[in-house]
Image (tube, rainbow, N blue to C red; front, side):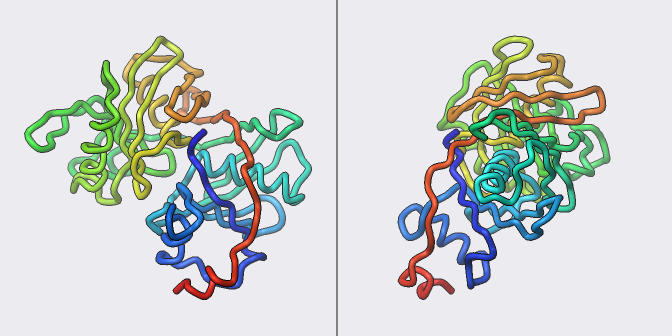
Length: 273
């Protein structure tokens, strides 16, 4: 969906994935180029364990699209032939369901959502951050904070402006109110079961699609009374569907397309540090 990631299987590399090396690999001119790296499997039995790295070298707590891409790799590489299996990331286990024979459509259990400022995290008194006034550079925004394994700041708008997302999103990501930084989304309500979003990702920048952003914006739309489950999330790169139950447990459905497979050349490896 335009959210392009690399899967690196640890059994095929001889070097450590440091922050500098991750940045180099993800660089679109001096590396292969990617929105992130799925590293694994670190275990060869269920749950299959993975780690996910942003292109700036930081590790993400969770990636919905990364989980789906990694699930596809596990099937393609022969680690599993099951139509249902488990993947662990950051101490959380996600149930994976393969929805078609071509292994292009997957449903992923994404855990639960919380709006608690302590869990997002956000500074200030402990509270649920729902339609809260947020001051930035003399402007007041109404935000809803969500954690779905990583932090999100969601705002609603009637008009989605990509330049605004890039400009303001980059500032809110590192705002002191978010001590661990945050993903930022703008949401336009289409109808009771459909939204359209634009995304600024923590550690990645402007992004065409994001699984955790889909989950966070669906939850924010429901708690603010705009939508009901299931929520179809339209993004610049594609569409996902998010199911949300009464306990804020999440399931994310979307597609995966394999692009290529290969190896790092000796010329490239010797330049890594």
